[in-house]
Amino acid sequence: MDRIRIFGGLPLEGTIAIGGAKNAALPLMAASLLCEESLVLSNLPELADIATMEGLLSQHGVAIFRGAAERRTLHLNAQRIASTTAPYDLVRKMRASILVLGPLLARCGHARVSLPGGCAIGTRPVDLHLKGLERLGAAVSLEDGYIEARAPRGLKGAEIVFATPSVGATENLLMAAALAEGETLLINAAREPEIGDLALCLQKMGAGIDGIGSDRLRISGVKALSGAEHSIIPDRIETGTYVIAAAATGGRLFLTGTRLDLLAGVARALESAGVSLTQKDGVIEVSRRSRALSSFDLVTEPYPGFPTDLQAQMMPLIAIAEGASVITETIFENRFMHVPELARMGADIAVHGASALVRGVPRLKGAPVMATDLRASVSLVIAGLAAEGETVVNRIYHLDRGYERLEEKLAACGARIERESDGA
Ligand code: UD1
Image (cartoon, rainbow, N blue to C red; front, side, top):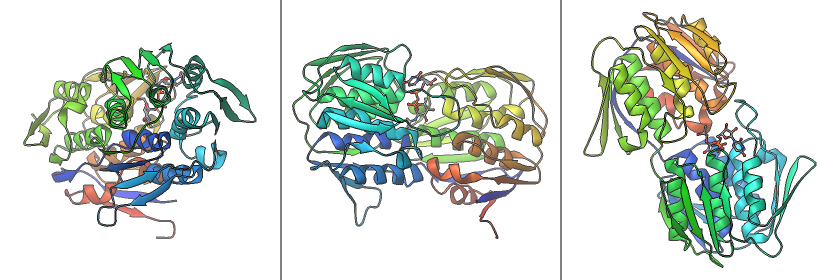
């Protein structure tokens, strides 16, 4: 198992190129199952999760080619669906595999998808996906750890009210409704920008969709969708991660290929802590306004609120701010696994249920720590960059699911960071 060794305390200075959004790329790749023609996706990040989705789609029969000159462009052709089963061995690697359920069912009238695994950050049910598909007329059952969904005569448009906004369920239903007969109304839909990106691509493929960016999506289904070309939006979580790393180390970074408007609630939170964030000519500049950071409270919420996927990264920053802050996690239970590890580095954090009381300390100190889920892993890297002395982050395999060339990008900005494999 790989580990990352960091000699901390150096401010990050330089320019980092941000990649396409993993969480937009995954549903967009699944959308290729909806039509016989090719879907061409550009600005794709090079990540383990993307490779997992490629593997899953290939076994469904999708022919996948990478641009010869442009490795970030993928051509996906699902002219022939070879299998409507998403097997356990592939699905357990990545929870987002559930995103093939809606497209396969809508296109083929049948889908068999293993119940997903993924990051260990709570129970993460899929009931909203299944109830929504039932509303579209599918018969859904659970058999031997698999979701069996059938709609032999096709899906029919309906009104679906989500009990809680779910990114994945909104995406699955959006894709399924695009091939359903008649009109579907999704109410209390999630509004994350990655959903908007999927909706824009489905429009290019011929689906009628109104209300993009809002929590009410109206979809006019069509008999068949056509191929399209689409460039994936920038990764707001990767962007936010480097913004936080710059602020935590007291450095100054320029981030290219991304957009400040995607950060919404994050920018507000950071500005109240004393971080300066501006965008000029398509480049985000981030630095601290003063030497000390101020405490501030944070609540994770569906978009446009503060994203749960940046909560762990904020913790080391808040841990070295002056005063006490409260971080409340409302999206996932069990998403404070980085807290005991940060405590090993001298952070003063007490968890009470869904809230963490963080009392600022003047500095963190390097220590050996253990990474758990994807975002917790990068939170420990940020802590190591900001800390005095040496930090070794063990079990970092999750990092490659969501961050492309993380050490390389950080090292180019002055960080002393290297990856070691066992035996190295
Ligand atoms: C997506 C993101 C993930 C992010 C999360 C929340 C992708 C590939 N992953 O995950 O990085 O952390 O959004 O922003 O885009 N829920 C149910 N029943 C369901 C589905 C969800 O109760 O059927 C609950 C979940 O337990 C959770 C909340 O709804 O409490 C939000 O989850 P959801 O938005 O569905 O997350 P994902 O789509 O899995």
